[in-house]
Image (tube, rainbow, N blue to C red; front, side, top):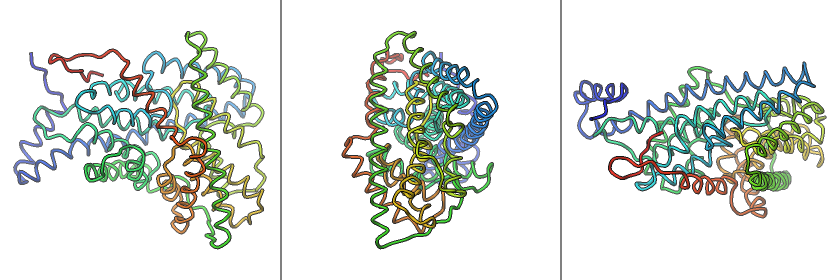
Length: 466
């Protein structure tokens, strides 16, 4: 018995029959038919990204309120939130844990004719829903996480779902292009950084020549970004910090800060990999639950001693350092945030490291600026370079990091210093590990996905059922 087309497929077929065929030539019609599902997915991505951000803002405010008003209560609420966030992932969608970017990279690698059916394990809508739920619960409990990596995985899941819903005979772009485009749209909508989304695809997500997917990526980034802007208005993620661009001898300061921050980012990534490896020693659910609760308990202790600066995304800290810097930020805030990021990520719940890495880089940059006695007028440039460099040390995408920070602040005058910082950080990070954090995790997710029991369709191929 033939499967009845979905309502979405019926709408597409009606548009093709009554509108597109009558208005356009066959060649133009084919291009429109190929692009239409991506436009729909991009629109949905923009809407979901905005809703997800609103949830994150609410969750972070809630956690701050609990810590400020009932500090001792965090020793109960934080471990409980960690346990619940981990349990949702462990029971419903194990591939929803962590950042989300390695899962998209693994999905792209597996989106070939022989293994594409297995990408459901990584990028189904069930995974996307669990991703949102787990990360929001973790953040309410004080988790030191971001939403940008998770948004990329959610966006790729949306693009995969829309691509699969197209009616039979519909001219389709490849599954790989759908996932690549979804990743770009997700990053653009999350940060309001369209160029960052495009550069991220070229630098991180794929080794394929850009001519294969440039139109799809460009249009997806535009639609997703404009959808987010239509709701939130034209905003900058970090506003307009005052930056004095110095050259000459000051470039030596830029290089020094970049290398230190890049090295620190690579050490952080290495620490996460080591902790995740250590965590695998715990085989039973009981042992894992004890580990997760212990992570939450330690983070609760940090929150009790340090306050709200120890938890959350870190965006308020970045804004304070760039716009209201009193040059009195305590030296221990960097190791506290470093530890909080590691505890949150190693809990096994969902949560990204993009935004938290930027905040760690900002704190480190401020500390280095004071240590080497940089003038207050030059401090913001040092902070921005350190943000780019620490993120580069973690993800090994120097151009993406530089373009992201550039678009977040609209400080085009500092573009060469930010790019120089990213390149110097890349070199310093390679001394710690020549392979990026995401590449390590991607390999693990590919192996994990291939180990899952395959579901075979009627023709003997691996089915794509979610």
